[in-house]
Amino acid sequence: MSLQQILYIVATPIGNLGDFSARAIDALRSVDRIYAEDTRHSLPLLRHHGIETRVSALHEHNEQAQIDTVIEHLLAGHSAALISDAGTPLISDPGFRLVRACRLAGIKVSPIPGACAFVAALSVSGLPTDKFQFVGFAPHKRVARRTFFKSLAELDHTVVLYESPHRIVDCLADINEVFGDEHEICVARELTKKFETVTTGTVASVITQVTSDTNQQRGEFVVIIAGSGKANDSEGASLVSLDRTLGVLLEHLPIKVAAKAAADLFSVNKRDAYERALALQGKS
Image (cartoon, rainbow, N blue to C red; front, top):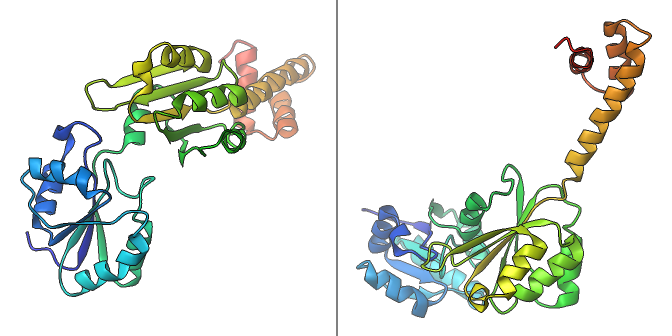
């Protein structure tokens, strides 16, 4: 593979080594240099797959200082790859500044996709995935964390966050305080690893399972919180009101006239109002 003046953003496994794609391995073998969040963590993975490429550290504390070095390396006609400790780089990990700088310098940045913990968790959670918001890690301190959750409590879509083992119990307690013990959540831990666990249920039931078994407090966590559902509740209430209004109008007006009047009152499509009227009369 001939690689020149390209920075590859390469996803690595989040646990199971078999999730390392052939393309990712090939690219990491072929580039001139790999930049890793923690070289001590990444070297065993790379060596396991026979990747002998030179590795340099690029993490949150040195990213800004490393940018000029990386760009100089790439502009000299070389290639490089960026990896994080696990999963897709830049997702709650460093790399944003480097990618932006490379693009501004006219250097091609190309993704080699693969594992991503929050996407994996969403896919098995059983919670709505048509619209969701990833919010990274919750604040460390309790007051800030509760304020953070309060800002999310009114959202009608799914919210996804990461949490560490030594804060998971406190995090769940704050979710309980803000969202209530009957709210639906999912806690996924150690995804793709031997002790993978995915627990979905009410906040109260999930807290019980996590606190009753200390093993459930170990590992890396993805926490998924169902939306408030208020938008759906509002739509349901509007439908009930439309039906009630149609019921009264149909006692005094022809069906087409009643449907038109209801459509005007509720700002809905005339055809939809007409179909509701037909349904109420048992004619649909």
